[in-house]
Length: 268
Image: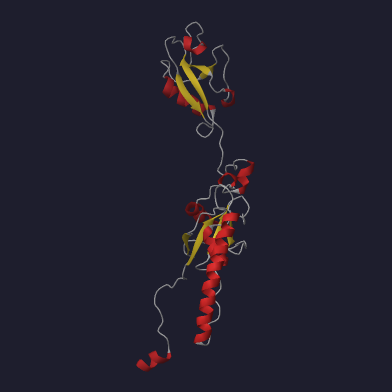
């Protein structure tokens, strides 16, 4: 038995799944973001690239809306889930373009990291190189600090986080709905009724019958359900589109419209 184990590898039992890829994501044009947001991409959780972008939208939090495009730190567009590499950094963009002038600080760290030079073979060369490197590094640090002071713009001329904001606020990405119309309804023949406020919204009332059912509950006619709706001057309302925002209306049942006992609040 031991001989067979030495020649053949032991098979693993159970369902074996692929290892997930850990990536670090940054916001586009956020130059102050030094640490990326850790996201685990596992094939059992994400089947499509759109599912990954939805996850990035909730975790990264772009000020311009959901994540629509993802770039590598080399500014290459990521097109599929397979393009992601474990341990790499990525830049998330919305509808705006990739801003290469305001790259996140965490991305610039990798770009500015110096490459390691070859090791010296003798101790004398290593000591001389260490002394020369220390002097050159101090000089380079002084020059870099001076260049940074010259290159840093004043606070009054700083660019916005997103370049597109120069032309105004971005458009909203969510579904925009029409504003509801607030109306005031009065009971027919009740001159002491102060009116009931109802908001006529397209997402709540699809038909005129649905609105009349709601009026029947709120207005409370003594003659029963609301069957007809009139304007204060006696015109019949026949469709939802005829209601005006801020308008006043009289609800009637089977009885005729009574102009003589009209509430004063309906005409004021």
